[in-house]
Image (cartoon, rainbow over all chains, first blue to last red; front, side, top):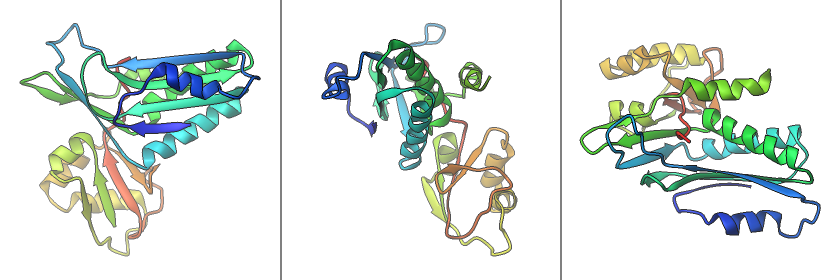
Length: 149
Length: 85
């Protein structure tokens, strides 16, 4: 399931909902992304996430379908927030459920790697006096490429 | 044609979106970019950073060879950025 929302989410409730009614699931793996302050810069006041409504959902569904075609996943969930977020707030939840742990671990890592390089989200960092758009990270692109090796 | 702008492209042009009439002789995304540049200095500057500006046609990533028409929804934006997690 794909959800793009401004509101925060409750991880416990979401994970419970993910597995409810499916006793074939033997394991759940989850990743939660948080707004991180940069120790190398001045203090981050907030981060604003802009996205492309419509295309975002399309790309996330495509990534989700790809994960299901590569691993025997029983269920998966991506919740991504947008809008202005403070350091420490939750940005994204990715969760995968499968009969055995390997598929859940690998599927979860694949989803977050692809999400970061394919989903149309842009981040603007607010340092009080200075605001700047975050450039794409070479390290993220490499993390995605490894799945094609 | 509807054109949407995101992130610093939106800030630079100063609009979320615009409606244009695409000349009928323009049939590829590459031709569209060349035409778009001629609309004014700001547009040329946005495209001038073309190795960093990406394009989508009808909400799909597009390259210069992709077909384009006046009925399409086009978007111009910088490379996407995941979080720093």
